[in-house]
Length: 406
Image 1: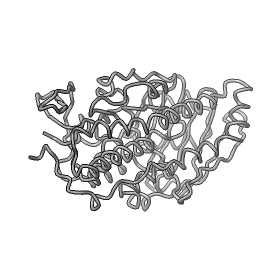
Image 2: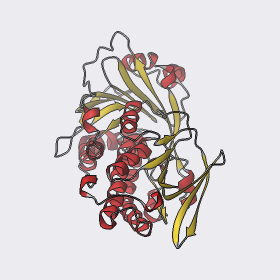
Image 3: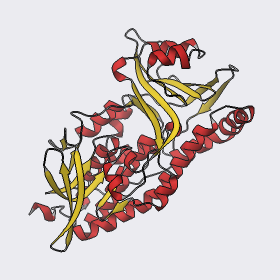
Image 4: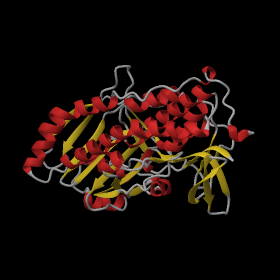
């Protein structure tokens, strides 16, 4: 019997486990892989993510490793025109940074007690049953293990089993795919630390790179026709892109390469769908897969973790422990808080990707003059100013012994 079971040890899963630990609840994290997954190589964490990381108590560890990102340059491959864009921080001074996904996961995992993560644990089914008038969650694994829990939180990604159990409609394909990778320059890549992010746009194609440190660059390439690897990117899809970009791709660490179709969940499925049932809910990509055009997938997953921890922490503060009868109300409040926020992010991200297509003169006008010239800074700043709140201090809570520990 566990207090909380979290399905998936990605960003959402580990961050949620850390949030719960800070409010006095130990969670068991079930991960189907044999080790922490690092799909995606790196990601940009905007100011709203750093607010969440601060609430989780790990922002200083990460901020010390990476240089803030203040601006970027966007090059039209056909016209060679270059625009400068700025990436604002928030009112508290938090600034965006590009970080290794693996480092982020490791920093979060280090905050958890030993044996909090159970690897090679693939769930096959979920059900609920009533025992002594209280609802209990039953999670079954492919090795025959049966785990009972008060709470189940699905952080199991785009194709979430937990989301399917809740009745959420499956995500849909955006029509675009992307390749991501890390490029390694043993002698140094020559770009200044804190070098602006470079992006390159062509019809139906978008690419870019940013320095992570003195020797590593994170790069991506997205297109409507799915690229499968570096050779196809260099020789076919991006052959007309600037040499500086092709040289970055050429230095790729092949083990870091990932390819994925870009999926998203319709925002109305978030607004009107079942984000929870009883004491079972979802977070991260399991709730709100979105296209990466505004870089908010990982950021919003961190927000989810803090919001869920805050609502469960408030429940503990009220009752002195994690009371089964009140858990459902806490999770309902969490789902209500997140609906509009993540539906807005999904919509803004999709429209941001759509407007950058550049397939006609009108679309290029929308992209260059309206979106980048007038809207981009306001959109990014508006998103970055979001504050997911703080977690109640465990020292200020009553004893958090659970009913299940009897």
